[in-house]
Length: 107
Ligand code: HEC
Image 1 (cartoon, rainbow, N blue to C red):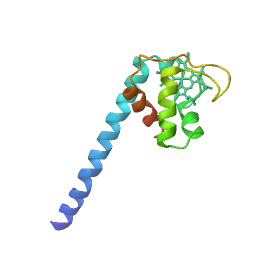
Image 2: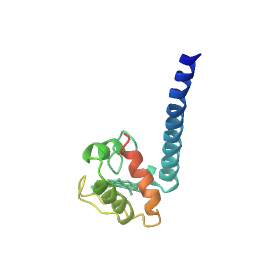
Image 3: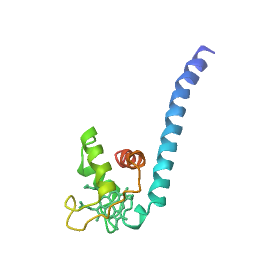
Image 4: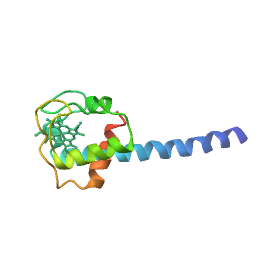
């Protein structure tokens, strides 16, 4: 009985963490398809732009790098992965861009 209680109390936060994670993941996927990122980026393969996995490996996860990538998504530009520029996506809010960047760092 006691053991079962311990087991259950360990499972609840785990299940909650997993479902929060799944919700964040789904939100990021929706933002990336809704904003046309999918035309140039895929998780594991290089398209016009680098794969999200390559981006995740290129940077340390830090507040500075998150802020840099949020700005870069919104302003566009070249130079990090070569000379092909990313067009600006100023219509993507800072908040939404951050959801995407945080998802990239889970890869
Ligand atoms: C027309 C093609 C294109 C579209 C659409 C596009 N990207 Fe990119 N993206 C690129 C290219 C090319 C680069 C490489 C830029 C560089 O080398 O600095 C890039 C780089 C990035 C980077 C890394 C930036 C850096 O400096 O390391 C992130 C993050 C990113 N894109 C996210 C997104 C997101 C999110 C969207 C959708 C809102 C998006 N991209 C839409 C082409 C695109």
